[in-house]
Image (cartoon, rainbow, N blue to C red; front, top):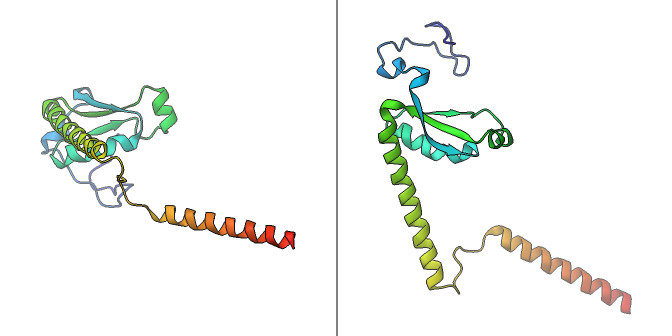
Length: 148
């Protein structure tokens, strides 16, 4: 249900404008097609942002459902207007190909030199090692105190 022009938007608190001259405003609900199915809203974030950056409007059906409900309902659907479907599918294929190429190159690099770590140790590794060392020191001191 659309609000009247000039009334404040409940989310952004700015006056609503008339978009009747916008060609995208003439898209009817039945004119949207599914270009991607995902099981969690975060999985659709990057593809949706990419499509919108290319000027393709998109809608994530079921976005407000919880992840468990969305999974039970068969997942979420990323929809675009029918007039943009081919372009959207081409963009999504291109993104998927780039991601697959990157993952394949990382896999090839890690199999070429399996002795080297694929990523440096993080702070959580160092903290864990420090905690382990402290615990072992305390155990040794406790045992030495009991032996005397």
